[in-house]
Image (tube, rainbow over all chains, first blue to last red; front, side):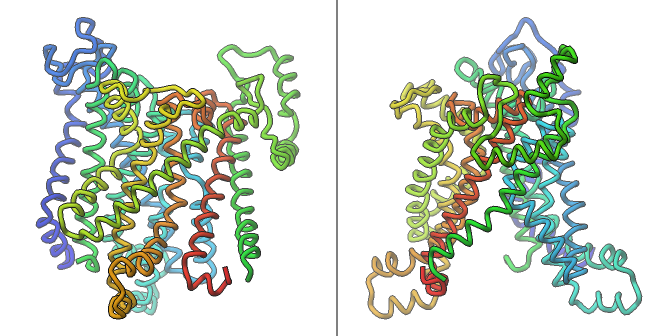
Length: 281
Length: 312
C-alpha cells in the first residue's frame, strides 16, 4: 500500500454516498449468501396454505409469497445471489481478457497494437445485445451461456481503457529501466505495467458489475436468460409483471432489489473514480 | 468533397460491418449443437432428410451461405423454421411498421423533452430546477426499461385506468402512449445530462464571451452561438440512443403485446428459430447502422469545421 492508495482510501471515506453504498452492498451480499439458509423456507418450497400472500400477512413470510406460495424474500435473495454471481464472474472474465489484451497492445505498440485494437473496434461495431441473443439461441439458455455471451463483449471497453494507460506508462522511466535491465515482455507487462493501471481498472470494473446485472436481468426477463426453477432478479421481475394486477408486491420486491443494487454499484463506482482518478479532484 | 460523395463514402463503409454481421450470425447458428428439427420426439429419418432437403440443409455449409447471401441481396431472408407457413421476410415486414412507429416516436419524444430539460438545467445551474432535473436523470438512467415498463403499466393502466395496458389496434394511438413513454424515459434522462454538461462547457468558451462582449443579447448568444455547438455530443449520442431504443423495444413489445419485430425476435429466440433470429438481428443491425449514418450526416452539417472541409 503506497501513499497513493492511502490517499485514495481517505478520499473515498469522505464520500458518504459511496461509503453508504458500499455498506449496503456488503449487507445485501451477505444476505444473498447466508439469508436463504437462515430463513424458514427454501426457494422452491411451496407453502400451500399461503399463496400470493401480501408482505407481513402470513407467518414467517416477511415479504409475502408468490402465486405458487413460494417465499418472496427467500426467492429474491436467491435471485440476487444468482445475478451477483453471474455479474461478478462475467466482470472477472472481462477484466482478465481486457487487461491482458489492452496492456499487451499498449506495450507492444506499432502494427501489433493496431491489429489488436482493430479487432476490438470490429467487435464494438456489432449490435451486442442481439449477438448475446444469438449466442443463447445457439448454446441453449442458462447461466454458463450467459456468462460466455456477456463476457465475450464485456472486455472491449476495458481493453481500450487499459491500452490508453499502458501506452502512457510505457514511456515512463521505470519501464525503460526494466527494459534495459533485460526483463522480458511478459514480465514487464505483468510486473510493471498492470500494477500501475489498477486504479482505472478498479473503477471501471465496479461500473461493469451493474451493467452485467442489467443485461442478465434483461435477458432473463425476456425468458432467454436464467430459467425456472432457478431464480434471477430478471425472471422474478417477469413473474411479478405477470401478476401485478392482483399482487403488485411480487413485482415490487425484486424490482426494488435490482434498482437498489444498480444504484449502489454506480454510486460506489463514481466515488472510486473521484478517489482514484486525480484528474477529477 | 461534395455532399453526395461524402454520403456515398459513408454508405460504402457500412457494407463491411453489415457483411461481418451476416457472416458471424450465419457461422454462429451453424455452430449450434443439434439442428432445427431436433424435437422432443425424434423425427423418422426419411422425414428428417426430406425436411433438410426442402430447406437446403443437406448442402455443404459454404453453399448454404452462398444461397443465404444471394437471398439477402434480393430481400429474401429464407423460410422460418418454426412458423412453417411464413417466410422470415414476411414476419419482418409484418412487424417493421409497428416497431419503427414506436421507436421513432420514442426518439422524437426523447429529443423534444430531454434537450430542453438539459438546456433549462444548464441555465439554472446549481439552483433547485437544475438539481431536480439531474436527480430525475440519475433515476431514469439507473432504472432499466424492464422495471419502468411494468411500473408504468401498473400505475397508469391498472390503478388509474388512464391508458390501455396492452394490445394494438391500428388507428388507436392510446395503445402507443405507454410503450413510447417507456422507451423514451431512459433516453430523455441521458439526453438531459448530456445537453446540460455540453452547454455548460460551451458557455465557458472564449468565443461565447466574445459574442457577449459584442453586445449580443443572452437569447441570441444562446440560440445562434451556444446551442448549435452544444448539440454536437447530443447528435453523436443518437446512434447509441437508437441502439438502446431497439433493445428496449424487445421488452416493451413483449410486455405490452405489440405485434412488432421485437416480439418476433424474442419468440424466435425462445423457439430456437435460427433463420428468424438471424434475419431479425441483421435487420436490427442494418437499422442501427442507418441511424448512425444519419447521426454522422447531421454532425457534419452542424460542425462548421467539417462543413467547410466537405462543403456540406
